Image (cartoon, rainbow, N blue to C red; front, top):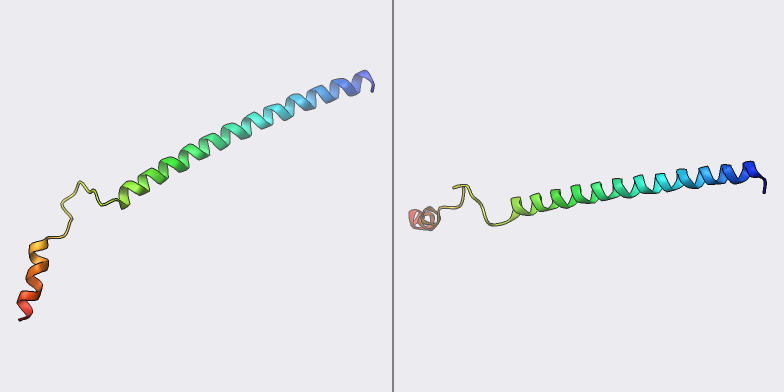
Length: 68
């Protein structure tokens, strides 16, 4: 193995290490983003709501009474 080939292989190893680091960083960001979206979806679908858009149980119970 000549001097030029060794230098070339060293550059290639350095480049490949950089690429692996970038891939890991991108994967980490992607995973964080997905987990954040998942948590938001869970909050939306949970039974705990902060709005007053829930069912009015009095009206629901009176529906059967009105038909009689």
